[in-house]
Image (cartoon, rainbow, N blue to C red):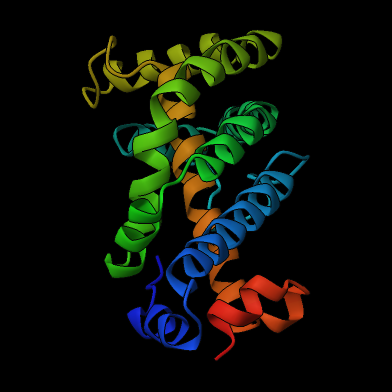
Length: 217
């Protein structure tokens, strides 16, 4: 996803006595900006559906069934199902903002240092460890309501039944609400990482003095 450079922190540490704390503050600021921006991008119409990076596709096990349905002239049914899954994710994502912001605000200096020293997935791992479980609890009812409004569960189960009829899938495999919820969270964490990369590339353009100090050297 992205890589934090330990050189940024090292430069900050050399710059001033309280630089480790400043560096942690800069990381918090970057993560909060990235999280809020990601929620804004995804939690709107076509936030998922119109973004190939996070667009929720049918589970792999149903792909062959979908191809057969297309061949049988039922393209509209497949498209409707995919659209409904993405709309459900778009409806759920705004609920993530308070939890993400609170996770950043409660970040310790040690958490920040671990992110700096971590690998390409360090930020994803941080947010997932702090927010994934409570976000599943928040997302599931919203995804369920959204899927009920468009009868997504029925459409999904109908497609799964057809797949089972072709011998491609067990009828009871996968729960659509859990599948969409998991993919929505995966997309959210991915886009937080993308936003952070933008801030890393142009900390001065963010207009934040603390980010300029930590990342602009």
